[in-house]
Length: 356
Ligand code: NAP
Ligand code: BGC
Ligand code: ZN
Image 1 (cartoon, protein in one colour):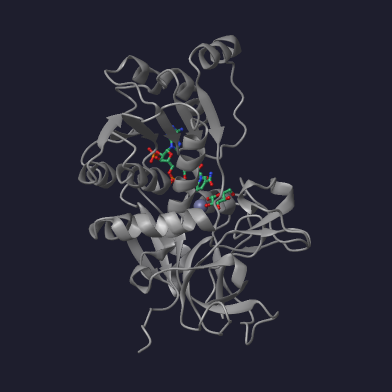
Image 2 (image 1 turned 120 degrees about the vertical axis):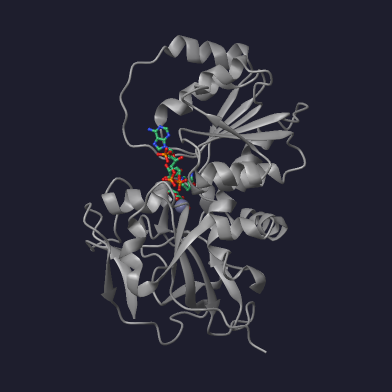
């Protein structure tokens, strides 16, 4: 079977032949036929060698952590023919941490990113514990479940940080118009606890991401005209900011931009970025403003289920607008070329055909 692999050294990914699974290799293992795999900013960082690492003893990695597939082998908890989205993390040792998404990186592998092969293959095998059944109506859009679940986990952690005080953000801001930023915008826009939503980036109109932000009912803010810290002086400073760029200065600017009592959730994964900062000011602003800054990575089953609800409730045009192009798997390496019109690229390994 064909798989999309990377040497994680900046050279383009390529298709390689691997032996396909003929049968499950353990009692709880299930063979999954891959439908689609999505590409995000992390995949680009993995290919560039800036994030992640190959499985032990190997110098390459099968890509793909945003996936949707159909189970081919039956399991008492999951009939054959189920449409599934796989979780990304696996325990590194025999004892699985209670929440893999909250475990230290040293305790886990991430499929397609760090220490374990991903799902960009015609078939893959997964333990049933790491597969989430999703409605078959979401078979084409299912690659959005994983990144949308990342958005939901971050919103949950932000809300948990304000559990003991009244907190109803009248204004929430997402920094970043990549696929993650747009999915955060969608999740916030459909969240009844949130008032209005803005999404910030540095793009000129016409631009497909600005069009999507506005069609969702959110506002577009240009960071070149409204630098992030100036949000604090705006008519309604945000009580929730989600950073989804990986641009480290935005993380610290978030502190100044938040309304008193606000929460900033950082999702971007930057490389090293050495700068001088006024540490006293950042410390003081957080304390006297009762501001919280949290980091959030990965997601678990509960967040996947929230993502399923959000995607099912989203207007039908959203998935089509997000998944800007679908490439047949034979053209998979081309998924790593992109320009300002690319929101998300999907690689299609097979088509979904509902069983009757
Ligand atoms: P993406 O599609 O590449 O989007 C990146 C976004 O960041 C774009 O809006 C880009 O704007 C902006 N950006 C990049 N460099 C910037 C800079 N120097 N200044 C201002 N804006 C900048 O990536 P993505 O898939 O949305 O992911 C966004 C980040 O989240 C990445 O760091 C990714 O690794 C991380 N991530 C984290 C998790 C998690 O679990 N925490 C999950 C998924 C992704 P332009 O288009 O103008 O360049
Ligand atoms: C993935 C997460 C992963 C994170 C850090 C993201 O792109 O969606 O599942 O934990 O990267 O590697
Ligand atoms: Zn990702």
